[in-house]
Every structure is written in C-alpha cells, then in structure tokens.
Length: 80
Image (cartoon, rainbow, N blue to C red; front, side, top):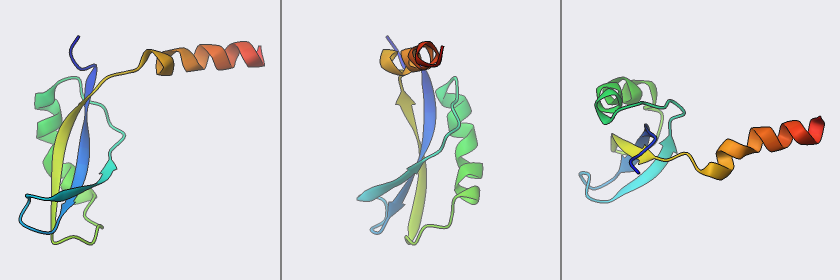
C-alpha cells in the first residue's frame, strides 16, 4: 500500500546539506508528491525562523495509521 499523503518536513543544516536536523513537520497534507514539492518554496519562506545556516524543505510520505482513524469514534463512544 502506498502513502496516504505527503507532508513537508523542514530541516536545518550546518554543513552544506549533508547532515541535517529535522526541525518541524508542517500540518498540511498533500495528495501527491508533486503537489507537496510545489509547496516547498512557500513553506521555506514561511518557516525561516530557525537558527541554521541552511534550511531545506523535503516532502515525506506519510500513512494514516488505523489506530489514528479509530480514535475519534472511540472518543465519541466514551462521551456518548
């Protein structure tokens, strides 16, 4: 099964991009890798507050875990 969606991860790099530290993952979800890649430029402009000489935005595949999908229903039953 392929990825359910893609997210943008912002990475901080100190050595020209070979060793980077993950800083944040943005909350937006993209249906395709192409849509995600097209949004990386704007994501970097909006998320440039980190103290690193170089910042990178990379798309990462993400999958919705079945437990995450079931949480709202379980919470509704408890409140119910």
